Amino acid sequence: MLNDIAELRTFVRIATSGSLSAAGRDMDLALSVVSKRLATLERKTNTRLITRNTRQLSLTEEGASFFERAQRILAEVDEAEASLTHGNVEPKGTLRVSAPVALGRAHVGPVCRDLARSYPALAVELSLSDRLVGLIDENIDVVVRIGMPRDSALVMRKLADNHRVIVAAPAYLEANGTPSSPDDLPQHQCLHHGALRVAWRLIGPDGETQEVSIDSRLRSDNGEVSLDWALAGCGMILKSWIDVEAELRSGRLVRVLPEWRSEDAPICALFPSNRLVPTRVRLFLDAMAARLESVRSA
Image (tube, rainbow, N blue to C red; front, side, top):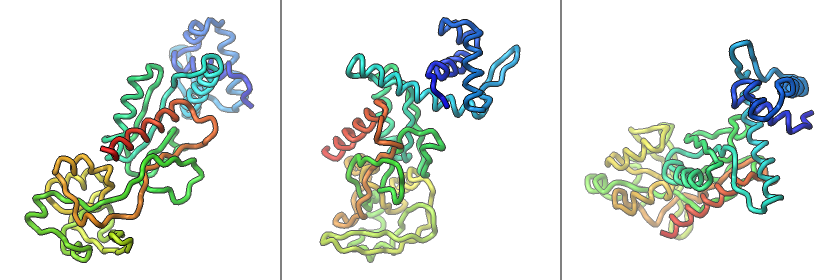
């Protein structure tokens, strides 16, 4: 059992400084003390964390994984101590965020950039992917996703209301006409992800629902590529309004069947625990919610 924070700090300092002797100098400790703390930590975890010889030191695969978690633990301990002694505390450590590509580039990226500018002790790693990632397995602090999770033991915070809308470039509609009802959609080029044939489930002005089977000659597993195709006039696309709000404002895209939209698909943040949420995560969540609210109100 790990019961000595000093051992954890020593291990992190060894890993960052590159040698036991350098860690000893940084921490003002004798080399024998540094070596003993590392040996004790490896004995307690029953794991070889570092391989070393006379020339170099390197983390084992287990050591590298443990190093990432140890950094997060120590950052949270430092934040907790600072909050007791100084009240308000600035975030430290590394904030690791995952988000979909389009939403990440348009909104999550700017929020991460502004947080890093505001807090010099904070580092940020942003991973953009349209696939679902595992927070624990991939060492992520918070995942931003569009749509409610179907089944998750993670804590969820809704950041903004959202739904999908049908959009197309003016050039496409000029060349192919504008649908007057969902029944017209199968006669048009529709862009979507994945399978050859999908169904768009739409909600009408009176709350009625209609499911329309859509086929497409252009399909991609990347939402940004599909959006580029729509902007180029290749067809219509069903996208979250947050992903296309800038294009709608500029006129590069227009709403098709504006009285019809998808079911609600709120923008949510998922994180491991509602207890002892690190300051960096709380600040990120608040900043994301504020940015999305400003976009919705624009």
